[in-house]
Amino acid sequence: MFASAFKKPVFNPLEWEIVETSPGGLELQFVNTKTKDHSWHKPRGATAEAMLSIPGASKYWSSVDDVKAHMKFLKNPKF
View (spheres, rainbow, N blue to C red):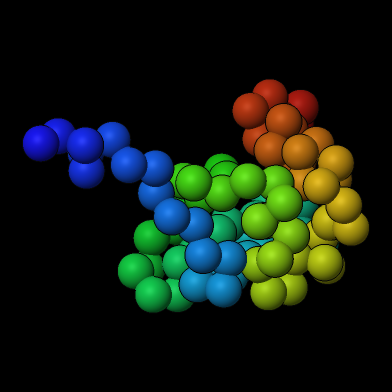
């Protein structure tokens, strides 16, 4: 009865884009082109592997480890 409330969100990387919000891409925002949802952090349901499939992601990361390092930085920014 309540199972649908606990389903993990499905992440489709082709529905997302990465928007630079500072010069040089130091700050990124993730925008869902279909729903207009946006996030400064990893989109719900996304894995590091799937994040590499977002169009244009290769501009910022070349490996899963790069994505994980970026996500870790977002949790503990050192500005």
